[in-house]
Length: 323
Image 1 (cartoon, helix red, strand yellow):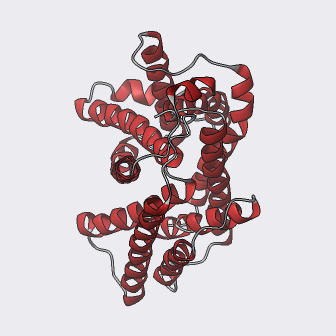
Image 2 (cartoon, one colour; image 1 turned 90 degrees about the horizontal axis):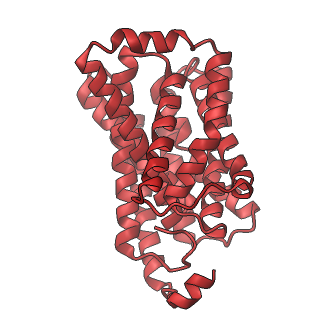
Image 3 (tube, rainbow, N blue to C red; image 1 turned 180 degrees about the horizontal axis):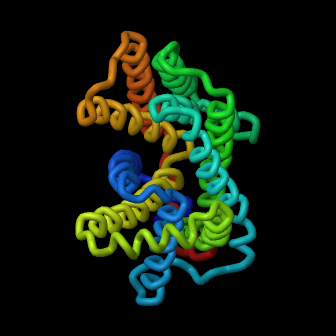
């Protein structure tokens, strides 16, 4: 979908974008877990995912399968902050996992919707309807209740996770702004983000010493069919996740994308309890998850009602070509 058409997306497209992002994001959690159990070099894996995505879009454009515009340096400079925030989000998220366990990490990252709402109010964005605001607060309260008293406190890990929330918030808001103002489609946003991200990622994997050892491990494990299948699936899911995330943000909003991420986290946590087992469930956890899910459902309903009341903007083909 082209971001610069100024045509109000249909409710079906909005729902499809949100659902596909949630599904891809949830699947990616388990795919990444499977690959990282055999290959612990997460930054190298992320670099391979970005490289695969960028090359796929490039060759798709060359062969005429996508309508992505040619690379433009001025556009790349405008989108540079997006890539900076994207890579900072990933870096701080990985750093937080050194001191915070995964359930607490997920709980802290679920505070992103509230951060997006607050940041939107400071950036001059129109105030969302009361039901939307209350649903986001409800979701955040559910996260806090679920996390209370269940995890050990690690100042460094908490600070890294909350810093990651900040960078993810800025990243999502910039993605939404770029799609609206610069007329970039979700595919074009993916291409620019991947192309600009690669130098940062290469610097990180060299600075952390992952290369060349990480590449030699890939070579050694290449004889394993299971490893190759999981690695290829991880690369494919990385592309799918990036596309659906950008699509959801451009078609809907940064707030919708983060709420879908919250609901995905609830689903992933629930599946993790069922599939992994051996995890104690306390009353606060269950209560918090119920409140969290109720907030997400409430938000979805409020946004749907808001979209129904908004008149659809339709412009002529002539006007569209003039933009």
